[in-house]
Amino acid sequence: MKKAMVVLSGGQDSTICLFKAIKDYDIVESISFNYGQKHSLELESAKRVSEMAGVPHYIVDVPDILKSRSPLTNPNNKLEEYHNYKEMDKIIGDRVELTFVPMRNAFFLTLAANYALEKDIYTLVTGVCQEDNANYPDCREEFIKLQQDTINEALGIKNFVIETPLMHLSKAESIKMAYLQLKGCMEALAYSHTCYAGCYPPCGKCHACVLRAEGFKQAGIEDPLLVRVREEQK
Image 1: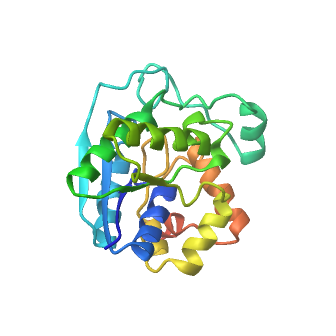
Image 2: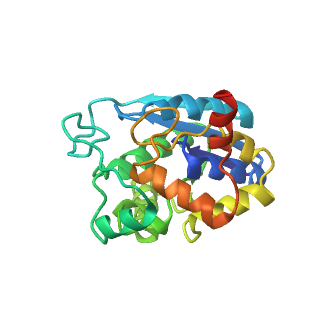
Image 3: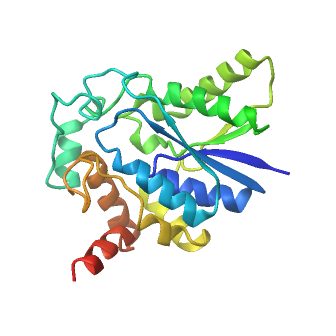
């Protein structure tokens, strides 16, 4: 039977990956990490999304391990805010986004591999994509391939795989895939959490919120999370 472990942050991309994995694999489990992130609300989302998907879910506590100047882990630094996608794109340009946490993905993929192997799972699924390439170096295809090679070398095997189904999709394309192909995914996206400010309703001004809004706008689909907010505020 085909088995996969999904690295589930609780955000938009990892939620889509979870439901794609359910479509593509016979057995699916999910794993999240509590690393002291400002937006820890995403862990509640990951738990809720996993329950909706009907898959086992694990939260690994690794607080105070990852150090950085990122406002996601350093309370002394403030999140950069933007009024819209055009402004954000102009401000950030090609520089690494300020929310980048060095070595986070390498650390998480290593831990996820450890958990997966204990269950005889040899496939990890993660929601990184090269749309974030200029802002997050550890979301590039080259990095994932090297990380996969490192894991296989560390284990003395050749069959451990890291799948990245969204790697070459724009945000709009991944949203359309969720809408058209993945049963139950849009309902789950209503409970996903993307906002780096760690608040609900989402702030709408951080890097993650602006990217999410632009993706749904380009896809021509209303964000189910915002539909949920509107319904709850009636």
